[in-house]
Amino acid sequence: RKHEIKGSKNLRRPVSLLQHNLNLISCLLEVGVLGRLPIGLSHYPTAPMFGVVYVFFMWSMTHRLASDGSPQFVYFFFDTTLGKRWVVSVMLSLLSILLMFYFVFALVDDVVMFWGGSWPVNLALVGAFASIFCRFRD
Image: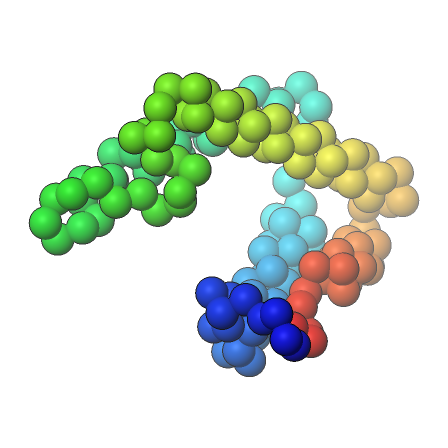
């Protein structure tokens, strides 16, 4: 790897990969097998409301993260010092991505219910998604 990015070196360590994979699998198991809450398209306004609350929470923490009280943003794209245009474009992008994933999740839920909604079907889908999103050879 001649052109290796040094900033992601720690993300390729076995402990980080194991944490990523176990977190992903536990989330998928909670959503797909244990929780089994129906996701309806009519409930789509709840996703942006949670997103807005999260953004305001992150912004409220900006002066509490650094010991000297200077602004510290958890994510660079939440940085309000970059101007109004940046903030508005980022928030609209995040809202679009959030809604896209909500609609995909609702579609997957409808497919699961079409196939019967039993725990073996849910477990098979969890396995399929885990095999797509888990990282093993980084």
